[in-house]
Length: 253
Ligand SMILES: Nc1ncnc2c1ncn2[C@@H]1O[C@H](COP(=O)(O)OP(=O)(O)OP(=O)(O)O)[C@@H](O)[C@H]1O
Ligand SMILES: [Mg+2]
Image 1: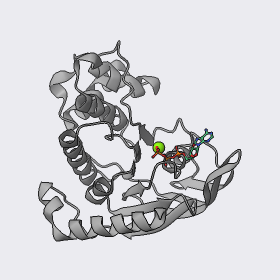
Image 2: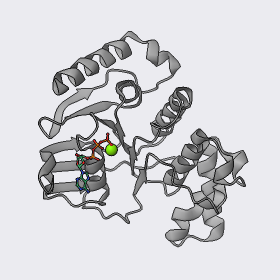
Image 3: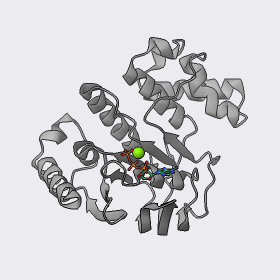
Image 4: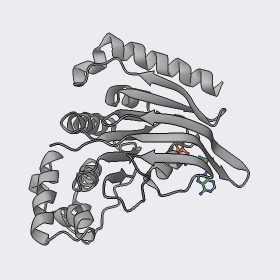
């Protein structure tokens, strides 16, 4: 798989809602092919930031560039994964995964071929003729992930996709997502509340603060590129999560 990652750059980005401005003059750069976490407490503006990157919300001021040019929400280079799987209950697994390609005008044969490849990548190839109602929560999220990968995006945006899952399923999906990223070249931005999830998954962590309405820290992850269950007992993982935890506390105190 060779999906070239897109850069994401924000300059002096502000988002205001009536009396509230969760993001004020925010600037950052994500390099092509990076895996970055947006970590911060509830209400600090993570989802708002992700939606603006996807072109689903307009900034009040400032600019976001994705790749060389700006982006629109219909751009097939970008995929967005929500906290809920949002599968169509009347379509089988295969039909849910072919949907983005159908909307882009692909033939049935091409859409089904690519959808099966995406289902294989998330370990669900044997479930293509199941209906969503017959899947577990973790399997539904895998289908959602396959649907986001089927267009071979250059930028994958995920908003707390695994937050509603039980812990073991979440750990497995974190591992799968990391492995998928390692074998691709796509850029990934991952929103989470979870310190350990940010530490395990990503290479750089943007820590957002409600107090300053923006990114307070950009932290490099010292862990090696390839991650596994053993990573979680690596002393660097322990140090990183401790460091993130104390910064988190400092920001909210
Ligand atoms: N459409 C909107 N209109 C008014 N206020 C909004 C709107 N969208 C978000 N907000 C406010 O902006 C702030 C940031 O919201 P956002 O959803 O980006 O936070 P978040 O960091 O994703 O939180 P959580 O972790 O709980 O999902 C919140 O105070 C929220 O109420
Ligand atoms: Mg949110």
